[in-house]
Amino acid sequence: MSQDLYDLLGVSRDADADAIKKAYRKQARQLHPDVNPDPETQERFKEVSRAYEVLSDPQKRAAYDRGGDPFGGGMGEAGFGQGAGFSFTDIMDAFFGGGGGGGQGQGRGPRPRVRRGQDALIRVDVELAEAAFGVTRDLKVDTAVTCETCHGDGAAPGSTPITCETCRGAGEVAHVQRSFLGEIRTLRPCAACRGFGQIIPDPCRDCAGDGRVRSRRSLTVKIPAGVDTGTRVQLTGQGEVGPGGGPAGDLFVEIQVSQHPTFTRHGNDLLCTVTIPMTAAALGTTLTLPTLEADLAGRDGETDLETEFELEIKPGTQSGAQQTLRARGVPGLRGMGRGDLVITVAVDTPTRLDARQEELLRELAAIRGEENPGGSPNPTHKSVFGRLRDAFNQH
Image (cartoon, rainbow, N blue to C red; front, side):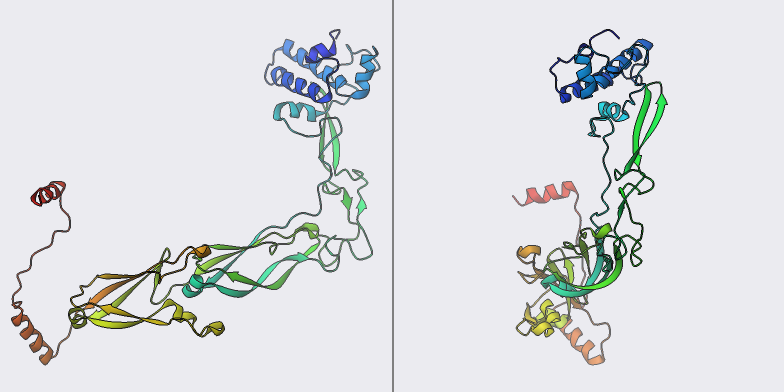
C-alpha cells in the first residue's frame, strides 16, 4: 500500500483524533463488505482500515510521520490487522455511532455493584368520603431494606471485597477471533466477577452478598382530597432499596374507592336518588338528607362538619325530576373547586290499597275527571322531517 494514509482517509496531516475517526466512519459505512461485497471494494476497505489503524494510534502515527514502518515490517504483506489486533469496537462505532471507547482496549469498565432499587406498588381501599376529603393511613409494606449486618456492601463483618484476578478489576475480558478482516477483538463481561470487577470472598450470611434483605416496615401516607379509583400517590424513596445498599426506588400507593350506599360518584359530582310517596310529590314536602361529610363525623376530632341538609320538594314534582345543589360534591384534586350534588326524585306509586284508601283515590279521580283517562303516547323520537315541520309551524 503505497498511497499516503492521510489521503486514503481524506484528512490533512494535522487532523486531530476526532477528525480521523469521523473520516474513517464515513468511509467504513460506504466500503464495508456487507454493503459492497465486490473484491475491489473489499480491498479498498482493508486499505482504509489499515490507514485508520495507524493514524488512530499515536505511536504508530508518529512512526509513520517520521517515514518509518509503524508495524515494524512490510505493510503490504502483513495482511489486514495481523499483529495489531484491530479493535472491533471501531467498526461497530462506524455503523452505529457508539461511544464504545474510541480506541483499542477501551471498554465500558466494571458495572457498579450499587444500583437504584425498583419502584414498589401497594393498593389501598378507602371510603368515598375519605377519597373526597382526604385521609391519613398507616400502612405495613414488605420491601427490600439495607442489610444491617453488612451495611449494604455484601461482605461479612471483618472482610472486604477484593479485586477480581481474572479481569484485574476491569469487569471485562477480551476475546480475540480471526476472520477475513483479521483479528477481531471483543470485550465481554467477566464471568468470574459477573462484570463487577470485584469478588466478595466471604459474603454476608444475612443477605448472601446482595446488601439488602426483605423486611416489613410501617409508614404513614397522606391521601389528598379528591382522589379517585386508580389515582396513585407517590412516596419518593420509600420503595425497594437497590442492590449493594443502593438508593431506594419510589413507593406508589394506588387508590381503590369502595361503593357508597347512598352516593355514586361521577367525576367530581355526586349522584343520589330519593324516593317519595305520590302524595308528597303532588303536595310537596321538605326532606332531611345526610351529607357525605356525615361519614367522617366524630373521626379524628371532627365535630364541626355539616352532617345533613334540607331538600325542598315542590308540589307537582314528577318522577325523574332532578335538583342540582352547587358545590356539594367532591373537591377537585389539588384544590380545583368542588363538584355538585345531583338528586333524582323517584315517585313511589302504592301497589296495595285498603278499602278506604281506594275509596278516597276514586273520589279524587272523579273530582279531577280522571275515572277513565284516555291517555296518548308521547313521541320520544321524531324524524328529521317531523322536526322541520314543527320548526316551521312555530313561525
